[in-house]
Length: 301
Image 1 (spheres, one colour):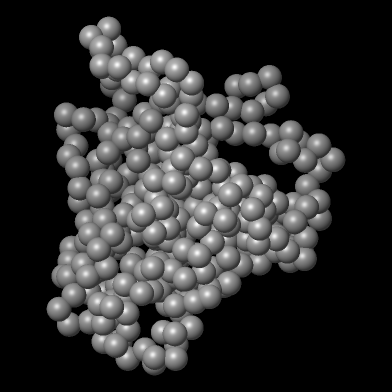
Image 2 (cartoon, rainbow, N blue to C red):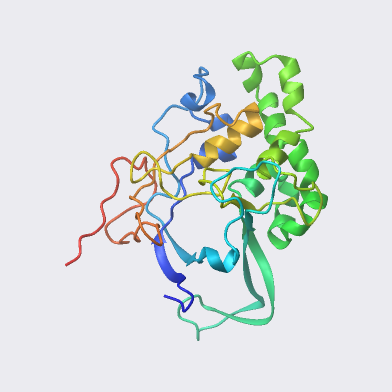
């Protein structure tokens, strides 16, 4: 507990993300149910590549009074023409520039030296993997959202996933009209509007980029924030973010139901801070699976 009433915790927890890696990163391997039942598509069961894995996590709980000292503007009221109740967040990973192999560090086997440099960042799920072209993905990891329009604007406006789906014959197999495919190929201002919650945010460096945007005046529902848990079951998220994003990009409709993959976590989320599920026990639980049934927590002795 912090002096301002906030809380912080760091350590190992269950990896809360679910991903059908074969389907997301290789469109030809999307599951049959995720492609409208196209004959020849991959049959189930679809497996989550993150099942059984833990991740080092840092969870923060920040009092709202520290963000909005005068109170949340128009609290409880959605104002689509306003940005004064928005919070925008991204995270990054830094390490020292030089990493030297050493026997002195029994944890990593490395010793860092030199200046700290950014080696990764994240905000919206699948932004780098699903929208940014492969030749620019390393640039993404080392850059800031403040320059995303200049660096990756064309990737968003003309999504490579649409061109891939067309080349694989997915649209033709589903009977999608060529005029619709042409529209999906871009320019796609609808994707940018979704990222910015439809608010009057300039499409320019320093304003639009890969950040999580949350309107704290109203209830959170992706892409308005990214709430963990909150679904119809303790191991289910409020929204399947993979399906929402892939459906928006490839079909132009976030509710199209594409790429659902695995829709539940391998463990139940906590209903209290930090909301992450407790870590897996390495000796007792394996990796990869359908997440059904949910892995139980190891009972306290």
